[in-house]
Length: 402
Image (cartoon, rainbow, N blue to C red):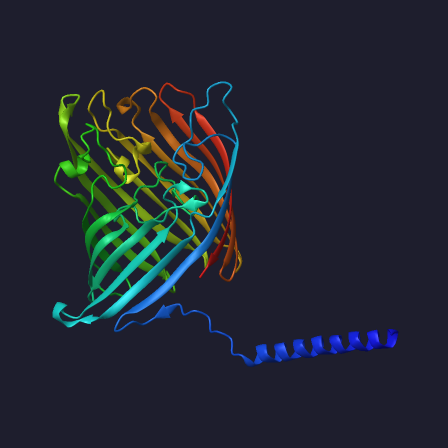
């Protein structure tokens, strides 16, 4: 009996091992599916896919206006200090498509390209985030000129600090956002000194949606004129492909209301500024922006404040940011800097934000497409007639680029 049982068990084990070997041999014989292509070519067009998977972990020891998308720090009266918070989210995960087509001979051989890019920072529940499109445009390019139609970043304030990957220190020193626009750029080719001129018309009220009279019509659209922007840039080579760049830019816009605000129905908005980027050594960079203007909330200035409803005056503000850093090794980079947005206190109503900015340091480690970062910000917001808000903010993030 025992011999028969042993023979049966041995036979079953032999069959199992044989089946496993056959299965393994079969798996080795079956060709593996190739990885999905990063580029496809439907017809005469080419589509190139790109993106990143990102997870952020954020700690604040005091309360900003929004934990995931901060723009300023809330006042801290006695007893309200150090209301800490921790959050995490994958909302900055993004996906994009670069498109290119053949030369269009009827348009003097213009090359047509386009971009579609979205992330998930558009509300919804934390487990049901809603997509947000970031860029969506087509562009016609000739040898020294290009015409862009669609949504992309503002012409003014083309740089942004390395810290705070979502709100980019908007309302705290960094101007500019994204909006629908039509722009024309001219940049003659040159190996040495290069110059460029970019000018365009954008959708007013695309960022702040200002509707002072509450009639359901954005005040910028009611003015029936676009948001006009322009930039003149210069670029000069210093070290191989690295170039010193400087740009001078500004914007003009108007808003109109149907019901007077402090006896006024028309409001102007303007700014002037400069950006610069200076290579340091082989891997470092010194860069920043400086600006001044009035009624800037639609351009992410004035600490998010536009019009004093009591006086009917636009709120003047000045600010900018500065940053220095670069690659220390092939796998580690560090940046440090300061941002500031300082509205004119006399223009503000009681409780208005009169100063908003932060000191920051950015640490990033990368191994190929994988990036790990830790950012620290010491962020303060001062108020007219209210206590200051101060926050120590730590942001760790994991990114896989593809």
